[in-house]
Amino acid sequence: MRTGSDVRRDRLILIGLLILLIASAARSYSRLPELPANPADGVDANTLVPAPVMSTLRGACFDCHSNETRWPWYSQLPLASHLLARDVRAGRAQLDWSHWEEYNRFDRAELLDKVCERASSRVMPPWQYRLVHRDAWLQPADIRELCEWARTESTRLVQGGS
Image (cartoon, rainbow, N blue to C red; front, side):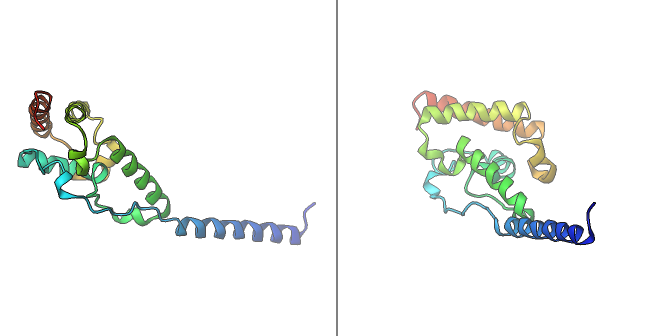
């Protein structure tokens, strides 16, 4: 049978562990450092991107796929900061519009094909991102313009464009 002092001791241990957990979570803010992008490497440096397409890219892609991430207020919350930093890191590893000129022309052509495919199939932007970013909801016209540009640019690159 447990005595009153055993129950108090267990409560104190539980409270101590809870305080330790909260303190460690509060200290572990993990937003990625903002690295200034070289404008000469960006997608619009040497590539003609129509204004509507650039607007679509900025609204639906750049937060995870460039160095121009707009960090929302909740990115300062302990768990959210880790999740968002992980998603942005993974997005930039797949495609980084801020480093577009660093890819060779065949990789760029392949990435453009994937951009169209994933936007058309509604895989990108992900549904959880669209929930909190109204400008990331791609309309059929947005997808059509994005895919037309991607196909034209991909063809140009494969045929020897730089």
